[in-house]
Image (cartoon, rainbow, N blue to C red; front, side):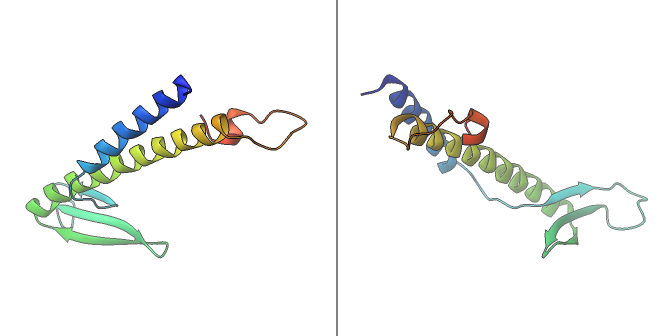
Length: 111
C-alpha cells in the first residue's frame, strides 16, 4: 500500500474523530454590545435569505450561542480539511485522463 495513502487515511480518521466530539452548533455572530448601546446588550445576527436577521439575547443565551458558533466554525474547518484530503486521494491514487499539461495543486484544490 502507498505510504502516503496510509498517512492520508490516518489523518482523515483523526478528523472524523474530531467531528464526533462537536457539541451544539449554530451559525451567525453573537455580540456583547455593552450597556449604553441604545438597544439590547446581547445580540445574535445571521443571514436569512440574503438579509441580516437580529435577535436580542439574555446573557445565558449569549454564552451558549458563543460556544455553539465556535463549534460550528471548528466543524467547518475540519470538513474543509477532510475535503482537501479526499481530493489528495482522488488525484494522487486514481488514474486520470491524459492531459497536455499537468494541473496545478491550486486548480485541484489541494492547497
